[in-house]
Structures are given as structure tokens and as C-alpha cells.
Image 1 (spheres, chains in turn red, cyan):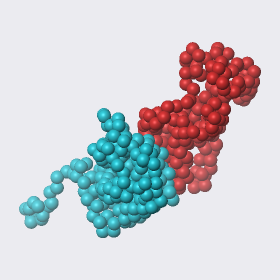
Image 2: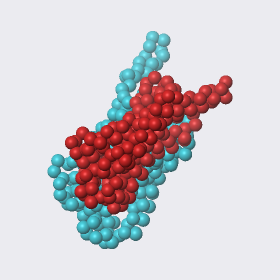
Image 3: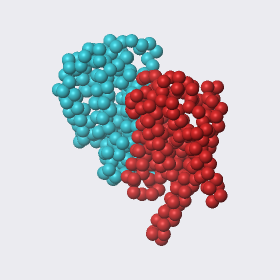
Image 4: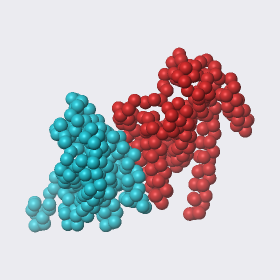
Length: 223
Length: 240
């Protein structure tokens, strides 16, 4: 309860800080982009980070399920995949808004956009598979196998896609590791990452609890 | 045959190896396929129909000369990929429908079953490519500057199509709405391969930058990764 309240306050502070405390990125302004456009950093990058984290957790939990056949691991895999999908959609939408503001169109098959669409397709297929197998145990095994297979195919995209066209995605100017980032921006950015991670952990635990309760109910039916 | 003291005959067999079992399954599938020709007919008719549709609506001169290498490669791989997706699921679905899954489980090891089915799917794809690719080249007046690279790309791309979809076929055999699910599950896995193969065929047609065979290497790497992952994961799917 206390943790949740603190997280709420922290999130609110970050949102206020993102608009009032942090300053627009100078090189974006110099490039002639709209003044406020760089503020999307505080919302777009954390959602993309959470999507990556969630899919990674989902894959590891799937492997764990296949090895140990522990239902809890499958609950984690499913919850993380669903949340990852949600955050992936958010990252796509925010990225698309940024693309409109800077590159001039919502969608132009930039490598980043291509790979995120394929990621959405993979997890869309994952949910389609889950809903198409009626037997619970078999559903979990097949979903786990697919999750791992998909993870093996993704690295090829990383090699293949950038060869088609070069990306317009800002990497160096807005990367916290490079010296280009303003210290105020960096503070708010790291705070935002932390806030989103907390939000994700809270949502994940909630979702796992829902699945556990539903699982218990199903077991009662067959008793 | 071996005669014992009391006159009984005992058949002595060598212990079967993975390769033996895989080849036995491959031949068995080929034989049953030759009886019905279900999968081959489905794939071939699908491929021929799309090829005719493409050729009829675009023809050999509708696309500008400069655009041809890329657009023809795209069309060729769309035809090949979706034709493959229309029939390759058959290899496992037929076991489920005929109720022979359990016997197959008893008579061969899972990895051997996977390899046998993979070989069968490869045969089907090879037959399809053998008919579709030359027809495509003839109908569309596809000019290829570097045929060796093109052939290698078509072969390695076909290997990739089979390697990526065989385990998916085993997975969907136990699910409902199989046909649609097969395409939905396979397509995201095949997309990196498809992009590579399209790029490779374009390169072969233009004849520039073929040194080192980059796309063929990429496709072969894809095949190796998918086959190894499948060999690891297939027993889980199969014994479920």
C-alpha cells in the first residue's frame, strides 16, 4: 500500500518534471524540430525498455516452465507477454507521434518501426496460439516452445533490417551514455525509467495474482 | 533370418539409428504422398494460381526496367512463401487426422520424426521450386546476371522455409483453426528469411555485390539455428 502510494507520487512528479523541469534538447531545436518534441523521450524510451524487459522475462519464464513444469512460471510468462505487448503498442504509438513531428510522417518503415511491428506480430501469434489450444497443459507447453523459437529468430532481424535502409532513429543525441544529454534531462529520464519499471512490476504482480485465482477456480470446477 | 534349436525363426535387426528412422519416416511419407498427392497438389495449385494471377496482371513489361530486379524478387518470394504455408502443415496434421500419431511416437525417436518430416517437407518444397521458379522466370522475362547466386539463394531460401515451419506444423496439429494458425505462427518467424531472400535475389538479378555471398550465408545460418532449436524443442511438442 505504502509502496504503491509512493510510486503514484513519484510518477506524478516525473510527469510534472518532464514538462516543467527538463529543458528541450538543444540539438533537436537546432535541427529545426518543434521545440517541445524531445520531451517524448521521458515516455517513449521507458515504454520501449519495459516492452523489452517484459518479453525477456516472458521468454525466461517459458524456458523455466518447460524445464520444471511449474504452473507459476507459465503465469509469469503469460502475464509478462501481455504487459510487454501493451507497452510495445505504447512505444509504437509514441514513436509514431515523434516520427510525425520530426520526420514528417507517422509511418515510413524505418528499421525501428519494421522490427517493432514484427515483434508485435510475434506476440500476436503467441496469443492466437494460446487461445487456439483448449487443453491447458498442452497450451502452456506449445506457447513456451513458440516463445523460445521466436526469440531465436529475432536476432536475424537485428542483422537483416538495418541492411535495407539506414535508420532515422535518434541514437547518439539522446543516449544517456553519450555526453550529449543535458544533466537535468538525464535526471528526469532516469527517474522516469525507475517509475515505469515500478509500474510494470506492480502490474505484473497484479496480473499473476489474477491468473493464479482463475487457475484455482478452474481446478475447483474439475474437482 | 536366424534359425533357433526348436525351429523358430527370429528376425535379427540392427539397432536403429536416428538416420535410419528419419529416412524410414521420409520414405513412408513420400509413399503415402504419392498415393494421395494431397499436399503436393495443394501447394502446386496454390503456387500456379498465384503465379498466373501475378503474370496476368503484371506481365513481363508492365514494370519499369530499373524496378524489375527488386519487384520481381518480392513477387517470387511472396508466391513461394505463401504456397509453402498453404501445404506444409499437412505433414503433421495428417497424422493427427488419421490417428497415427501414437504409433509414430512408439516407433521412432522424436528427433528422428522431426528429421523425417523435415526431409519430406524439403522434398515437397524442392518439387514446388523446381516448377515455379523456372515458370516465373519464363513468364516474367526475369533477367538474372548471376544465375549461380540466384540458384543458391532459391535453394537456401527453400531450406529455410522448411526449417522454420516444420516444428510449427507439429505444434498446430494439436490446435483448433489449424490452417489460419499455421500462417499466423510461421510468418513472423519466416520474415527475416524472406527479407534476406528478396535482397539476395535482387542482388543476383542486378549482379552487383555478390562477392562473399552474404545473403546465402545468412539464409544458411538461419537454417542451422532453426534446425538446432527445433531439435531441442521438438521432443517437448511431440511428447505432449
